[in-house]
Image (cartoon, rainbow, N blue to C red):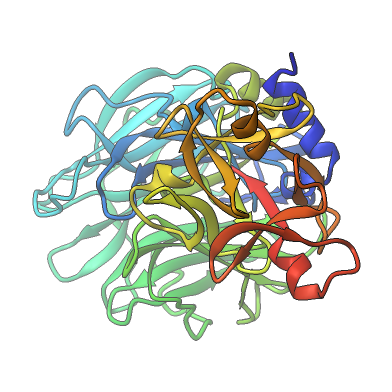
Amino acid sequence: MTTRRELLAGLLSAGTAGTLGGLALGAAGGPAAAAGPFGGYVMGYFTESPNRLANNYGLHLAVSTDALNWVPLNQNNPVVTPTAGTGGLRDPFILRKQNDQFVVVATDLAGTDFTQPNQFIHVWDSVDLRSFTGYRRVRMHTMNTHTWAPEAFWDAARGQYAIIYSAFNGTRDVTMVNYTTDFVTVSAAQVFFDPGFNVLDATMHLGGGTNYLYYKNLVNGRLYGARSNTLNPGSFNSGIYTAGVVNGGIEAPIVVKAYDRNEWWLWGDSYGPVNGEFYTWRSGNLNADSWSLLTKAQYTQPLNSKHATIAPITAAERTNLLARWGVPTWNRIKSFNLPDRLIRHANNAGRIDPYPFDPYPDSQWRLRPGLAAASGVSFESVNFPGRYLRHSNYVVGLAVNDGTALFAADATFYAVPGLADASLTSWRSHNFPDRHLRHANFVLRIDPINAGSPAVDRADATFQISY
């Protein structure tokens, strides 16, 4: 019998590898200490479903080779969860320290009660992100306020790490800083960034002689950048140089650099009008105000990920993380020409709908060896196991496998190079080999489509496999 590993390998060879491969990028926070050359990235995040019907406030991890398309680890379940404080975390941050090991810091907050003051952050040590030790809560200040979105960076001039975070200093929301050498004992808190108006979620990007601080302006909801040639508290206050990047309600910026050329990506987390959605922009010059929005075809975030962190890792570290935590046993499938839409079932109808939506497992599929031929593929629902996508009168819907040969044939498809883009995937029907799976008015069906068909039909029949 064909195993799922062999099945996915076959799918990748049919053209889906492009969704997971590509350029290796540098991460926010500046160059790492000693590791390298880098060959991948790790993302840390927590999860909230689109309507907050299913949340998990533990540390989740995903890996990538290009920092744009991500493979969630541990089935998108947390790899570690706080055992003190509120019992959950938000806003995790991963830093590679000067000794080439990692530290994880995070907001001590579970749920959505943002009204309670909390002076602590969560901290873990990790040699390789495959295990986490030394869990502790570190008190950052004595103010009657929150301690949100902690990040850390190495300040070479001081010979110490700086931990920055959002807090209300008695006048307005600012970025505070404490200094430490061990993430156990910290210096007294002081204001790090205060441009004269309320700000949130500062993130640092170091390197090239100029340091960059990106943040959310709470007055207008936009993401802005400031720059300074030092890392001293207050040095970024007058260095704002961007006009503001916005795409709805956005916060939690991450700046990511390609380490082999001057190209940057800016990630932002959406909290409204929809939840659990990232937007990504590109720039060819971080020193200029030149961000352009990417399409959903160019990136795929981990499922329901919120307020993330990205750190560079070596190819060996990426391989070891995959070996330790495993890849998902399910996939999501994105439309080629409507890349904000995913294949899903709704009231047993096969459709493509824009994500995010709840119930989100409607868009998760186990790609099984074909029921009629192991060299093919059958799409089993994750939240309704035993039900598969099958065609009937050429319309595709979700149905219970009745064990008949007809059902098996109707529910089996063959992965072929994408009819509109050979790096992606199209699916040919097993028992109607002149027909391919496609969407029409957002509904799934099988129609006669081939390489000579109109471009719009070939595009409707092309899909991108992701997680």
